[in-house]
Length: 386
Image (tube, rainbow, N blue to C red; front, top):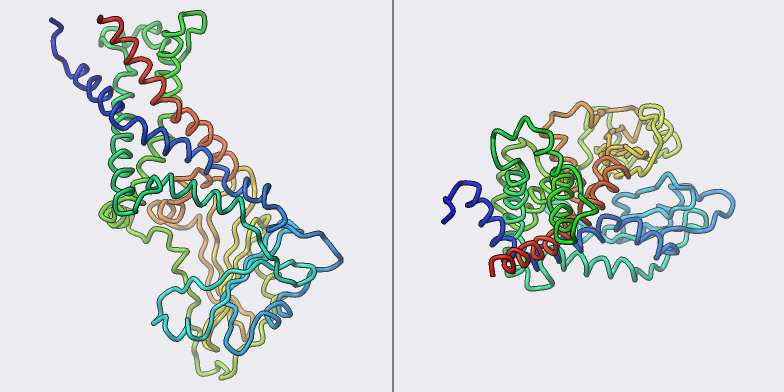
């Protein structure tokens, strides 16, 4: 009878927890692979919803706002992109929503605007609707949220344990082999000329090791969408609010010299100043308008590039004088603040541009195969014992 060791305990836990959670983890990883390029897939298949034909000059923002606003409707903010023919996105609020908000963030209604004609774009949203269903399957298996989220959450905890236990099992079995390169080599390579059983084992072992770090990041951040206690605890650890860009507001600029009437916004000057302060290429710029005459106008800009952080630098301007009131740069934040700001990007893989997105896609694809290759390893071992 074999001696029961710590390694055997880890091996048994890795095996049986993997079998117990395999189907759920397969579904979550497969949907995660699809969602890795959600933005690109939606833009490609629903292109008419996001892009318009270039026809002359763009309509000025002040004219677009004047057209969209009415007696009961106000423009809260708008987003424009670096791509010339990409449609603008405007967020509209009703006065009733503003009055009932009690200072809390209000989502409002988002409309897509052709930048050349100034007309609303009637989006079909077919691919976006499909991706929303995939996201629901990813987060709570299309079940009731109270049931599906804990199931996915528990399986995600098992997934994190599987990553760590897999790393322990990846190391050479005997300590005396730690200085022997041959003992390490099989953990880094796949023996393609061996039997299919050995190739399957090497695929599980080797590719699992190479994908380990991104998979751990996916798992540890994925728990945020399943457990409130984990969400609150991580905020305390990081010392900052997760996804705080959703809650950012304009700031007060009240002074004795502040005019009583609403400012007439000079977007050309403000955006020119923004580009002079933040001179990098624009992926997306979000402009949040003041809802009162003593509030700033807030402009947040995200840079574009293969390795650009998916995080915004933030500027506040006095809308009456166009003077810069404050500037907050992502690079100057604390480590905890940066992680908190990038938390969703760390989960889906776009936190540092297309480079990390491609890495996450490949690693998530590997993760989708791990329950299959792991089950085959178990079946082969059972046959061998018989």
